[in-house]
Image 1 (cartoon, rainbow, N blue to C red):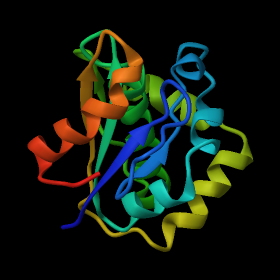
Image 2: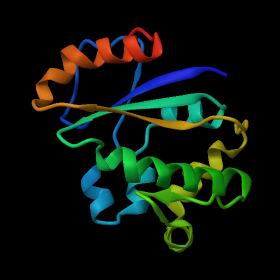
Image 3: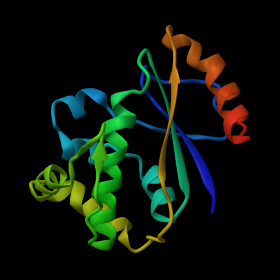
Image 4: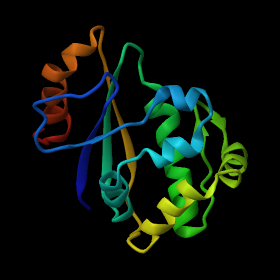
Length: 160
């Protein structure tokens, strides 16, 4: 199974990143429960890699242990994609709470735009891929340009 690394654009655009993708999972939209917009804003390359069965490491930095994009966003994306592509409802746990029923309701209330985007990618779905959070705890966001490639290379053996 192939591994892919995506950097979440937490603090704006990054430069100098070579062999990885970028994704934008906006924590503010998660806080505001704008579930459809979170899905609509996802890059097609990110979704296609996930649909094709790759393990997706999502790198994000935060002053906290883990950013909202990782602890809430990735489970939502995993739930929505799995439900769209296979019809299966994954038991989903976020911070120790089972949120499957809540995500079921939020998915049922999505308008056509995000659903159409996910349905389009259904034809490419191969089981097995995972969305894997890769948190980097930082005091200064600017350090991510210097530290993220080193941390990813050390942990995954993947040059970014």
